[in-house]
Length: 611
Image 1 (cartoon, rainbow, N blue to C red):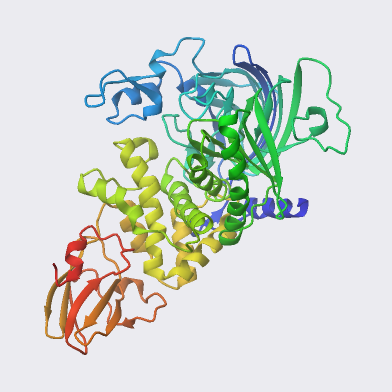
Image 2: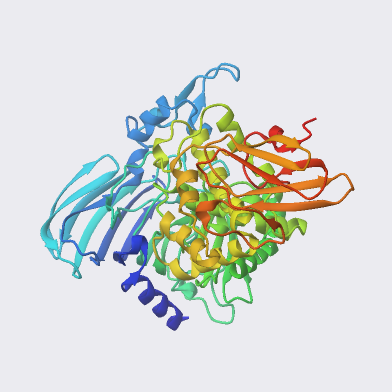
């Protein structure tokens, strides 16, 4: 394992040909944190040593940190956004009106001083000398005493304090299941700097983008509390709580608190959760990865949280086989948060009174370990890449493992997309995740349209090519920050087809697909492209003698077609609105895209005769 991590680290950091055909580089961090938590008032203090390596070709004169918990204060950008968006997240607001005429109040706006969240940097030094800094909402701006030159390292030493907010979104204290501490986004976190510059986004609602590196974290907390989260526990015999080797003697120190020491290598965030009433189950797998399950020791949760464990093993095996090998020693499924939220080596999931209430969430959040925590896309700018790709692969995994249905992503999953198109709500997927006009469109865009980008590639380049694309994408870009172009270029390399048009149309426009059968006369068929988005077209013709024939009309700018047994016709250029071809027998019926994998917004004109 040590050799594997060394290889992965070197492959991620050293120069390689990657994004946009330039020399690829990424920054690197080494965090050492020591934190003391007061479980009575939910306040904590900490020290942080951060060694930052500038692998960029640029000299850096400032850096930025995220202070996420500052969002949970009245008057914050998150609070004001809640008060102005048309469809606020129901977890974050209170409806003081009726179901028919809702009137929403931001929960953040009502927080008392003892209930808010905050992160306050007390002192900060660069290479031993104090630096100037200022807090701007959820971001800390730091002016450096000395620039960080390309290839150089610098060390930041910080003291900070925080308060865990009442649980409103993702992280906080005393969630609806009664979990004491769900500690996501809890520490001053250095912002990412890449070929686009600094990503010092304020925390409004959406997800994250972090710097690859290593974490050495010691957490001091009341000894009744059990912790689960990112990393590998370094002192299990001094802690116990289900982590210990039963063959060795426990050496738990005296006192009211325990010091939990974790290390995590090659990750881009650090998360933990703690509760005095966690049940901790451990499942060892034949992959070398140990699974931890931490959930409330309550009989209403016990059955489902036991039942989910073998499914998690099967999910690990599925993702290892169909994407790539999970490289870490552990993964923890933890009751916490407010739904499901992915983090490195762990997830926080709420509920569990029934298996079905948490099973789908587990499949999805575990899938994020590949599509976000190993393939670390920018969730703020390309939320469709991690959410959509995870939705696609977790749906396949769930279908195969729970239903025995292999390699099926049903077009029924397109319904949200058709809804936003019909109601004029669609927006380009290039929209920043925080700046979609509605939460509905963020959700449909990120989860549904993102998953459809993969689903339709089955239709465009073929199933086997898509499977191989996913595997090669992982092999080439895990432990890096891949971009949309990296993915589509991978698909091009695997399939041998030109696909830039598809990426452009699907994520940068709101063009829709609408092909129609406009005329059938004798043995001649005429099709029309009504929607603005072009596609290759599959056509099934049934003849009057009862036989049928499948045809594929290639899209000219692909310069080829998917592997298929269909009869290949002359290609169709996107600029030409109609296409006519002849068949060999008298025609009974014609269907465009019998599979319905192509997201045609009007299927009524895809059939002849139109009944």
